[in-house]
Image (cartoon, rainbow, N blue to C red):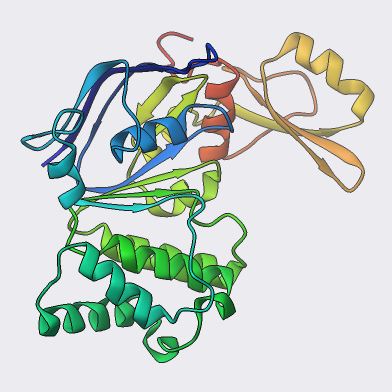
Length: 296
């Protein structure tokens, strides 16, 4: 069962064209959706989650017409938005039980077993009676995943899930997402390139409402083998380098600037070959640099 998006477009009343003919095919597993703020990621996620309508295009999840049959989509959808409200004085157990009722778990025994299983899966069982207002950011995100998993969804959408998490919680959350994605489609919308590199075997990069690249991360990185070069320079040298070579990224290191460029051959003296990574792919795509050797 695949998620198939074809020519999806959306313009807001203020004139902003948030989506411009977006087309993607997402197979089961973890799919990373990368892009800067304003790229159209959240608009696409909200459209897939049936929270807003598209102007044109089509979306199918298996045999479900996502845009036309919203009730059918919601029965098989789990959604963790970037920001979601929790009742701070209610316990995790009480709120998840309430959400399970709303999801259609009317049999008390089945509901109790389901709630317990999800709290254990997200490592929240031992704190199930604590008020949600006392939870850390990572614990709240794990509770968000627990509610998204109610009803054994076939499509799970998570929007910027690791923003603000400490390293330990980020790793724990990554492991949870990886486990979940073994049997369903999980779309991870983020601007953190490392999350996609760590978790996803399929991805797309969006910019200004368009899909600029859809590929397997490893294959996209391989396109840059032998083409990324690096040098540490003074800030005054940057302008000259940018005039003669396509700059992929710059980073300040110990008061000097480390610059990475894209070059088919050996560049000017002082540059050393560097191993490409997904961040190089991301910045190259945003800057309009081609990854295809044949088109270069």
